[in-house]
Length: 293
Image (cartoon, rainbow, N blue to C red; front, side, top):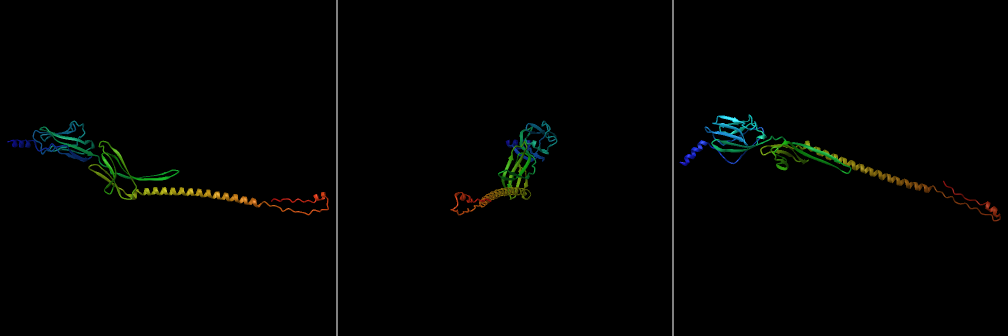
């Protein structure tokens, strides 16, 4: 008898499940169906759907349906109930994320669903970021690739090398948008940049031919600048050395020339006549002069 009563109650209430919270995920703009877990709506039974504490849809006797309730028009013209009481949300939005519950007038909560609506993923953009820094003492180059994703939420941006993650950055907030940038030094191998959330991904493959040649150009510029600076320094040193050598040679030549210009005259001696008087002897004295050129 007890078993018979249980079977009757089961047939009156329909098949339903009152399990733990279930999860559903969808990309913004897509439609999603939230299952009521009912096989059918019984006569005189009323089904209600709530989003948080707001009543958004209801059906009586599987005939009279109403939508949007007190949800401030959030779901206007985007809800649809079927004969089992399941709710379909059309053209989903990120603001539709949250907890949905379905209940019946003849029983407590039937089903609870946590819906997450993810924003559409843009295709990440790969660009080169090259710069040349020079100073009086040194010159250096900085060249890298940048993968960017603008205005995204609850995503991960990653550089992949083959099937392995090389580096990554993420933003976990679903309610706010952020701009993500991820750098990578110029490489020869084929890398790819991937933007993903738990249900979708967008991939951009690296084209080394188009982007990494910039790095080589910057490096060549640095080498040319360094070579020019070294050559300039060598020319200055050589000029100073030549000047010093010429100056030293000029001073040596001047000293030798002055030494050669000094000429000493040989003195001339005459025999003195012993028979002349002293006065006469003094008159016959000849003094040799020194000639200077």
